[in-house]
Length: 355
Image (cartoon, rainbow, N blue to C red; front, top):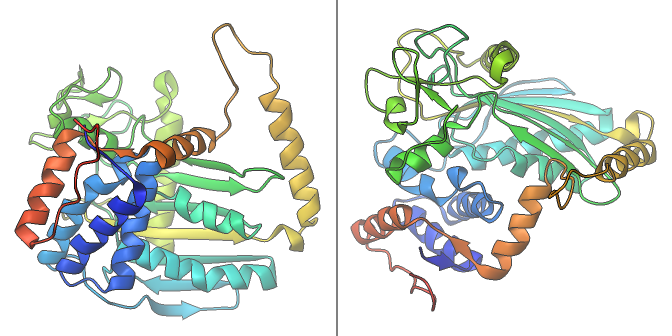
């Protein structure tokens, strides 16, 4: 399993995107996003996505160099069309529009329909928190990417529709970022690429029976991912349903519907709040910090080293991988190396000690 320094991997991925005509600034934005996901342990949203993105670019499913088009706006709300530009680029442009508005008005919302895959939502939450702001975010798959069956159903009807929220504290922010299914589709894709069975409790086959075979998501007849919630899966399903409706309906895009095309991107909804315009930044940080400390100091069960809050695992992995390098599964690296050869891009040398 090879391992690369983040800077080396980012430069390599930037060159891959530039080789298919992506402007340097956009290529760098997407590369930083993907490697940033790997650094935080979310390999499902990391550089394994590069071949997929490149295919979309070559097939013109993603458009190169298109602006984020403002469709309508009020002082507090901006509705945009991503025009199938690269998702990370368009999502950051949407934040560029609404963060300043939130600081003036106390809150602002923005949507962007028909964006390429925007990656890890926590990335945008962390950016807002760096400016002392609260962000609540969700996306859907533009009506496609139906991977989750409702409780009792045999066919998938919804996406894994994630929800993300960030709250600043005196220390590190609390960053909640989760899919409304038991697992993100990208994590199943990791097992599929590596030809390994998934853990029990993730998937159902087309007959509604539990399975550990990841191919049921990618080969017809399709199986499905279980909704979040275990024996109370209606909770995860209900949350996914509402987020799908909002992501499509507020953005002017599509929610899940029959005969949807293959998944390729996201409709985005961002809501930003400035605590200064509510009870004050100090009030929020005081309460968020004391709650965080109170929870962290919970007496621990035997064998538990620490109580972790949302965002802690990512920060721990970021520290480790920043020091030791980003490990890539052999199958993922093979696909990147093959793509580089096709595009005439030099492959970085394997670091000493990589297997």
